[in-house]
Image 1 (tube, rainbow over the protein chains, first blue to last red):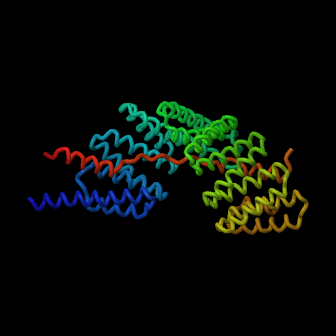
Image 2: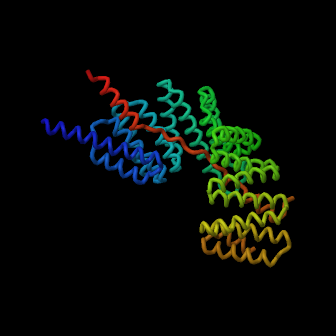
Length: 356
Length: 46
């Protein structure tokens, strides 16, 4: 009996040690190795169900960060079942929140909304204001994603089907409800996130002036925290909104800040996107030389990143800009390159455009 | 009215490029749980 008891103690200690190491690794962003420690901890096993719940939860989050959403779903479901079984309400609220986020990413919006509601209900029951705010933010994100998903590409923001508008409107309501709480709590970081996504919902609804107001708030808070990634996001989103307000010069200034920050942050994909946006903005301003300059910058990065879709878009835009300048030789050369890439990547629309 | 290159620019500046804020995942900290267990054991000591 004594041997059995010792074994249990050793097992518990070993499981917790492995899990703590998994937690440490995930905190520093090493999710792959972190996952293997958590899985080893589960293999060893534990009779402490709070520890098991935390392991399931952290494994789900690690897989979420690794973009393996089916695995994330599996572990968050285990966590939800476990917390319900042991009657851990706070744990159930958290598991519901994580499950909702995962279902949202998988495009299962209705199931995600049920989870968000459960997260919200439990948080209200426990008088947990922080939990309520987080549930409302997640809820907003689910409706935003649902609305965006309904919108087909190629449509202007504001011209979306009624179903999409209803979802996006709901998203703004949840974000506003979240803001009321996080303002009361004085949580500026949470306010920043919510303003950013609220701005994007307004943008899709075609409320560009409201989008600007929200993104300006997001920018202000990002600066307070010295959060350059958030600042970059805000500048990019502001640029988009100003385009639709017809203020192309202002949009260009915001895209330029996006470009500077993406270079500081060494984010080549965003740098390419900023160059592309600037190229298009200068086309709208009929400053074709500058447009060509930015489209060429975009092309070079797309080639470096082996992004054939980006390369195709750059060639198409360059073809258009050279046509506008009357340089038909260069225009033809880029149009041919665009056609070649469209064929290679099986872009039938691009191929037809290029042939025209 | 917009010329062809401008129409193309408008088409490509549509909705797909905005940037969302990150999701907030709920966390269950093992470190906090371990520290609490440790504190409870210490307080239970004679």
